[in-house]
Length: 133
Image (tube, rainbow, N blue to C red; front, top):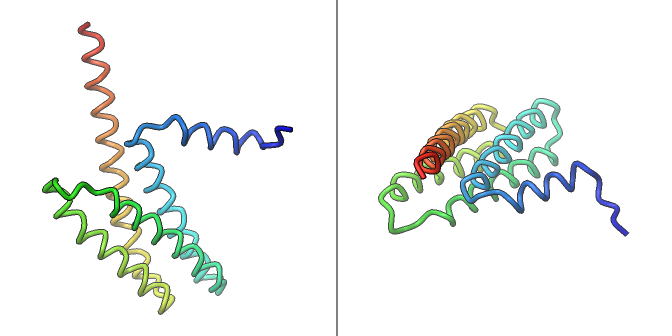
């Protein structure tokens, strides 16, 4: 029997058909969602939920770190920034520090916005190349 809810089926289909660039964008969006939720959890004194959401954000950052290509120069620039985000998340979790969550959130949003632009540029290039054929 197929009992999957329509929104779950859509989400699974989105992930299964996404390009690697789109998957990275999804990771950034998920990380942003969990950091924002952790901020709300701190404000609501829901510390167990805060811990869970920060850990989810940390897992995403770890995944992004693992996927960096060590052969590329960009990795040498990105890795310290990811490590900084991890430190912010860790401190925020230990001290219920909203400022540290804001620091992490700002960087992740900047990465997400930049990544979104990269995807759009690649799509434009691909469209232009297919139009020439």
